[in-house]
Length: 571
Ligand SMILES: [Zn+2]
Image (cartoon, rainbow, N blue to C red):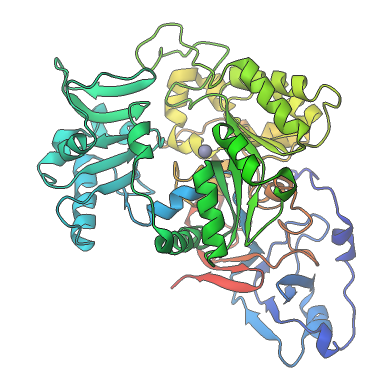
C-alpha cells in the first residue's frame, strides 16, 4: 500500500521542520499546547508530531513534546492533555447544503438506518408522532421531516398519504424525500397546498396517483413539488440568527470548521449575510450562488467582494447544475440505463439540466469575471458537456487554475479524469453512494460502470486532488462515514463496489482537509497542522489511520476548535 506524494509542499511546510530551543519570552508563549495523543498533521513533510502550540487563533509551532514545551510553554499557557485521543485539522466540507441546516434543527429525521429510524413505514410514523408530542405541536401546524428514502422501504412499497392520515388528521405533514426534490404529503397538507385529483401534473413534475384513480397517493416530485417548497415558512429576523447558529453547530458537532452552501439563491445569501452580521457565525461558510440568481447576486456583491470572508461568510464562486442524480435516473449518460427511464422510458439516457449553449455562455461569463465555478455533473454525458463548455470558455488557456470543481462527478470515465488534470479541474466525489445506492447503481448501470463510481483511487493515481462530500441534507453530516465509504466502498447489501477504487485512510482524510483547502484556494491557511495556519482543529476519540478500517465509521468527534476556541464538546 503506497501513499502517493500528492501534496505540494508550501514554504510554510518546510519551515515547520525546525523548532527553536529557547525559553520563550512571554510574547512568544503559546495560548494553548495540545499533547498526549496521536496528532495527524496531514502534512507529508512532517506527518506525525507530539505537540501543537496555538497562539491568537493560529498554529504557532508543531514538533516534539520537549521542543514545544521548551520553546512555547509560558506561565499562562494552557496545556491540553489529549489523554490518548487524536488531534487532526478541522474538517472542510467540500459540498453540502448549509442553508438546509437552519431548518433541519426543527424537523424530524427519517433517514434510513444507520443515519435515522426510517427502515419502514411504521417507523417513520412513530418518529413523526414522537416529534409532534415532544415538541407539543399544536393542531393545524405544519410538521416536516427530511431524509425519506423509498429505496429502503421493504417490498418496494413507499410511504403514502393514507399511512399518515390516521395519526395526523389535523396537522399538515410533509415528509421530505432524501433527494430534496420531493415530499410525501398527507391529506391535510394536500388540502393546504391545493393538490387534488383535479390537479394536472405539471411538465417536469411527478404526482404519484393511487392505482386506477386520479387521486394523488402522496408523493410529489420535481416541478410538482418545487412551488410548495418555495412557499414554506421562512425564519423571521430573530430566528435567522438563532437558526443559523443552530445549523452551524450541527456542522461543528461533525468536526467541520468550514462549511459549504452548494446552490445559493439570492434571498438565502442575503439571509446568511444578515445573520452573520448579527453575530450568528461559529464556523466559516462558503456560498456558491446558483446560476439562476447569479446576476442578481453579482449586482449586490461586485466580483471584488467574492473570495473574501466577511463575518465568516465568503462567496466562493458560481454554481450550475448539468444533470440530476443516477439513482433517480435523471443523471445524463452517453449510454442508456439498463432498467429504462423513471417513467418506464426505453433507451433512456437522462437529460441535461440546461441547453449546451446556455451552459457555454455561463462558463464564459464566470471565467471572464475570474470567479471560481462549481458544476454539478453526475453522468458521463453531463461531464462531456462540462469539458466542452470549459474548452469553449477557456480557449486561450485551458490549463489555468480557475478553481473549477465538478460536484459529484460520480460516473466520470478514465479519459475524462485525464482531461480534468490537463484543465486544472477538481472532482469532488461522493463515495457515500457506494453504501447508500451501490446496489441500485449496479442494477441501473451494470457492475463495471457502477464499480468505477466516484473513482478516488484512479483520480489520485493520475495526480488529481479529489475531495469527498456528504451532500447534506441528502446524507447526514458525518465525516467519519465519508472516510469509511472511501476506504471500504461497501454497499448497504454488503457488496464491495469497485475494490480497485478504495483509498487509504490518510487519502480519505486528505479529501476532507488539505484537498478541500485547495478546492477553496485556502491551502495557505487551512487543511493541515502547520505553523501559520488557522488553529481549526478536531479531536477524535480514536485515530482513523490506526483503527481497523471497518470501525472508522464508529469514531466519535469529541471536540471541535475554530481558531483556537472550542465551539463543540461532546457530553
Ligand atoms: Zn448538492
